[in-house]
Every structure is written in structure tokens, then in C-alpha cells.
Length: 363
Image (cartoon, rainbow, N blue to C red; front, side, top):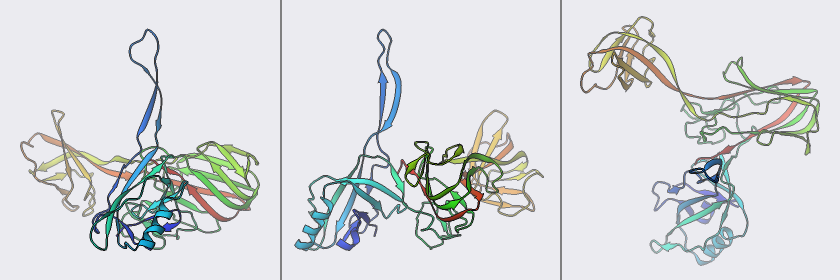
């Protein structure tokens, strides 16, 4: 069963779990509401858009109490109802921390003689979630799965969405997929160590040849903090305390549909097509990708590729309902994770830790 950690206490230690009677987790409010500020101009119709902001977020979590011991319930009340804002982490997304407070009365409803249920509402005046891992937490070469089930040291079989490809005291390359956002994120990078100079670059490709952003810093020793959101650099807590030149950094956070192959169709049936000679000769090469079938009238039928035989260049998809005789051209697309590839170089570098922190808008 899922759980949460609030104010440093794991709910499981107090017999509290997310979800009703062991069912699927019930967590609502997937994103914070937004507020739009407008300007009213005399003599003009309507209003002028000025700015848009995220409002505070309320995260509602349905929970199950598995121990109704009176002394334990008092302990739970003192824990949850303590005044202040504390870190909140949900086990469904353990890579993320919210700054939350619990401000309501605790009134669980008795479910049976041994259990009770209720909904807990956590208020986040800061509407963002924040990354909750550091380079020290993540093992070299460990791959994390497509829903960010972050779990130190456990390699997942799913495709890599967040991978630290190399962690050491040498010059690390760091790959980050910021999948919790459709917005750009402005990371805060903390580097502990020393060097005569250090250069951090963000690239759009895993070979690190297509440079997007780069920043170079002079000699440093101690804790170097690069806060891209406010465009400031700190060395040992003092702002702009070293020479620097270049860009601050952004993290892209959406998937992109890329055209990977296309051309004329040699022949086809309602559920398969023979592609031209430019298509791959590798079996299953296009499996799972999106196939767009085009007729001469500007109409397009989209199908998911079920199978592909490279020797005959035959692609299989679910049966087309209706006419398909005019289809003569195709394109194959795939969804590509927009990774953020970082490379760190420098002179006389000795790095002991690297920490990337960034915001998430969506649950």
C-alpha cells in the first residue's frame, strides 16, 4: 500500500496508508489553479492580459487508519496538526517534495472495529513540487522508469526517463528528463569541490555536440550554487563572488513527436502495407510507433504499428474501417523524450558532490 512522509515521519510507522481499504491511491488536484491579472483600459472593450500566476495548491489524500489505539491517535493528531509548513512526500512520486501544511481538524470516520478512513487536505502556499534527489543518492548506470519511480539502486526494465549516466569525483555527464512538467524549469545546481575553472554545458544530444546553453566560472573552492531561476551565482553563500560568463540553464520537459521515416507505399491491404526501399530492413524496427497514412485528398489515417517485417518491408496495423484505396504515402513518427544532457569540464577540478534541484508544476 502507498504511504506519505510528512514533517519527517513515515505514515506507515503510525499505521496510515493512502487509499481506501487497500485500493488504488486516491490523490486529487493534479495541478495548482492559476490566476490571471488583467488591466482595464477606459474607453476600450474587454481587458488586457497582464500576467498569469499559479495559486496555492491543495492536495487531497484519502487515507486508511489501520490502528485506532487512542494513545496512537493522539500521537497522530499532534504530528499532523503541528503548526507550520513541512516537507510532504507521496510514495507514488518519491522523487518530489512539496512544502505543505495541515490546517484542518482530524476527524476520521470509523470503517470497522479496527480501521478508519478520512481525507487529509494538505495546503501548499508554494504551488510547486521540488526534486528530492541528489547525485549522491543515485547510483551510476541505474535507470529509472517511465513514471519516475525513483528507488535508489534498483534498476528498472522500463525505458530510461531519468538517468545519471556517470557519477564520480571526475568530470560527470548528467542526463535529466524533466517529465513532471510541460513548462520549462529553471534548475538550481549545487556543486561542492574546487577548481581553477569550471564550465557547465547543456546539450540537445547524447553525444554532447549540439550545445544549447553554457556557463563558465573562475576559480572556486567550497559550495558553488547556480540558481537559474533568479539568475544568480553564489560561492559559499556570497552572491556573485567569482568571475562568470554565459547562460543560465533551462530544463525542457515535454515529449516531442518526430518524423523518423516516410515515402511512397508500394502496396497495401486494410491492415498492412509494403513500404518503399528506403524503409528499414530490421524486423520490428517500427513497432509501437505512430503510422500516418495519407491519401491524395489531404486526409490522414493514424495507426499504431503492430508488427514490422524488415525483409519484405511489410508493416502491420489494426484494420482500417472504410475506404483506403487512395492511400499512397506514409510517415512514421515516434515520441521522443526531450532529454537534458549536461557536461561538466574544467581545470584542476575536484568535485565531491553535484545536486540538481528543479520545480514540478503537475502531480
